[in-house]
Length: 125
Figure 1 (cartoon, one colour):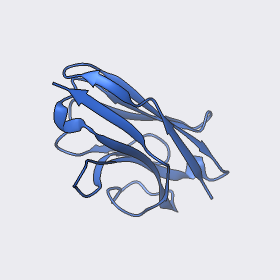
Figure 2: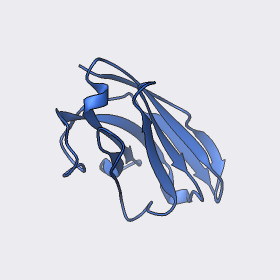
Figure 3: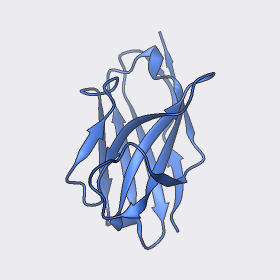
């Protein structure tokens, strides 16, 4: 089992930066791919970014590519989402997630079965 707690959300102006943190507990963290997803009001939850179990491969949604960076520290059981040049359309609740299978490095936009409680990000124009 993996338990996840997000932090770092808040209010930021368009063009600014924000850093989201995900703290994980559980023995299998370092063997699982991790992802960030978001859900805006009235919309379905969508994939934002993922990183494989050893940090060697990352994947981004087109809407955030070049602006967001995902990273992980397996020694500290943490995942980070660095958000730069944010836009009003980035406003959403952001969720950290752990993949359901260990040692996966592909197909990482789906298959997550452990979720955090979410953290709100609001971007003002």
